[in-house]
Length: 310
Image (cartoon, rainbow, N blue to C red; front, side):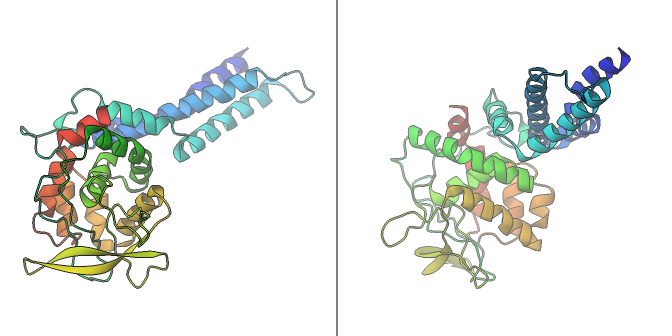
């Protein structure tokens, strides 16, 4: 009887106690990361419940069936649930999206608008969002973030909905809130409408304007861009990385930041939207002197928030 109680109690161990303590501490300094961690733990609980239901539906009168084997099987199932939740089955990412966009997000999350409503998509005649200049061959860059007043609310919602799973995956890899990466993708690509394209018109799926430097062995696409040299805008045509999907674009963006030491501060402490944008520009992501301000405005904008809450 006591062993049966142990088996039942073990079902509650899908949530690691140490992880919960860490989440409690993390929630004070980084609510977004804490939310993602809590969603992962919930996903582990859900997987554990599914596995337990399957076990219960399986005949348990075999030759090697006993209280001891059921205990060890339950412990193994919970470990498997934790491992599967770390890789994700989609439920956690969905929860993060829904919880992030429900109600008004508090200022600590770095997503709330600070008093005013800045961009709703990028403004008319907005200066191009252009990237760093050193080294120019590998600097992230993209065509100017074109003013596109025709971008409808439906398009913005479609962009946010379709890119959210990729942003959530990249967020788990980097620790950068998914909203921040989604906002940067919107800024760099004009909400997906102004990404670099191949000669036949097919998309490059390059949402972050990363150039094809000498270390890049994949496909490329040529596109016009604007660089700022000593504060002066200079137009040129450059080669950019091309991908087979938007998921690949987000994954490569995450690898780009992780493989470059100068973005260590961005990864170690994303902070709020303003801090994230300033750290990116300070690290040399963009040559546009107004890049940090523009990026923070997009991340904090009602356009992005409403797209996520739709």
